[in-house]
Length: 241
Image 1 (cartoon, rainbow, N blue to C red):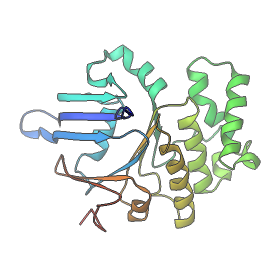
Image 2 (cartoon, one colour):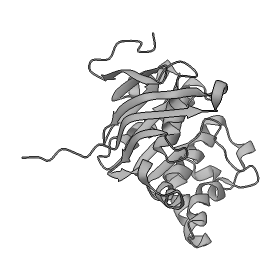
Image 3 (spheres, rainbow, N blue to C red):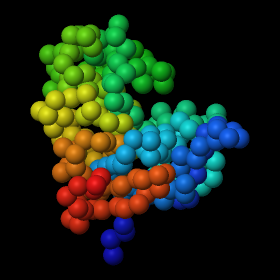
Image 4 (cartoon, rainbow, N blue to C red):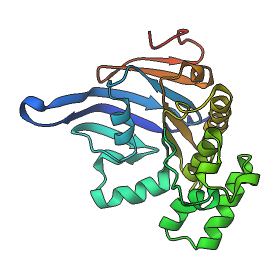
């Protein structure tokens, strides 16, 4: 009998509010979500429905008011505050919409930042970042600054940075929003290749309908709740409608 892979992420009953008194706004209203290992899951829904708040809690950046998150068996919502940075550095790769590359650093240096912050020797970090960038087709751009790269190239540097510490969960916030169609397709193909590894998973927040065909699963979020979850086989043509 083949043992099923452990879910990458399990969220149960997540509640999160901001503000106090009359200004208090509840953003998450009891979110239940499962992200399977070896899959790319897209999280879609209108602006303000809680998507970014949800992935921030999954990544241990924000705390939940109620509920539980487990990431590959680690109870994120029960970790002590001083344990969260280590958890993120070992388990999570975060890819931002605006790339968040340091403008004064080259591609090699930007990709190596997580390793250097974790205490790796600079030469070892640069060796590993060079290998990652070359794997992503950026061998000729190693010493260029972000301003000298196209949007698609900058996003690939951001992907290399997110992957260099070999995280098990890659979380992406609108990774194709600033890219043209060709660059967006390249980025999604890269993320898709990462997601098919059973020891990993990719969770993508997106409004970009061009990305839907790359997903194994699409979860629709409305008003702070997951209202539907469809696999690649049975999802509707436009899950955001």
